[in-house]
Image (tube, rainbow, N blue to C red):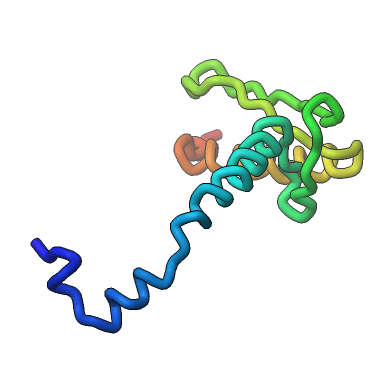
Length: 109
């Protein structure tokens, strides 16, 4: 195991160049970022991704087929246009994924 004293001198000087008070100040920034993150959603439309305050989002729940064994999933959108476009592509992706697991049976007359 390498100790601090085993490191080359220029790396030791680089590490000593950091101000330890910076960590204390950065904790306040991290707390603010975490608080903001906890009270917001990101728009689930992949081409928008706006930050939405909780309570102002449009929620849409996607229910899965009964034999798919997945829980329902809730998506958040910033406006009706994003909800419409986003759900179209999300549902389309799930249909494609479902088809890949359950290929259609060939038609036999």
